[in-house]
Length: 135
Image 1: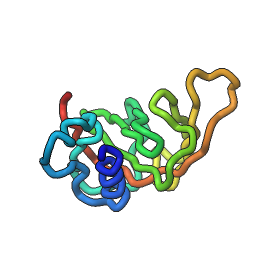
Image 2: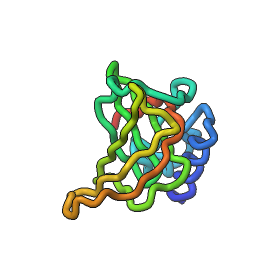
Image 3: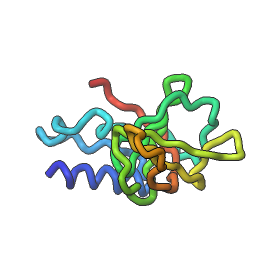
Image 4: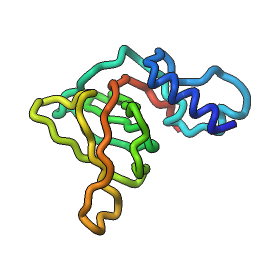
């Protein structure tokens, strides 16, 4: 049940649907982590300014939250699962612009770094402004 609820959330995010939260329902919603109950607060954007990115949080193999200055958060749902990316990893990116865009590629930096060999390279999706409930 939990996997199918998560799948619906991922499909809605990938489709650019204006709501990531699931309808208020039963105890199944209570099982979701706060990040899985995020609510969309605006239109998707193709790029975000690099200087405003404070922190990134890998949520799963296909979801990265970009915490920005001004208490804003953008969720990026990758177009395809990024093989080997997990919550404990970090990412790097390189761009010649002053923005990070949906056309850019991230590189997974598996943690702990032991071999120095970077992980998978994966394409970003749209940046969707979200609000995550406290919890």
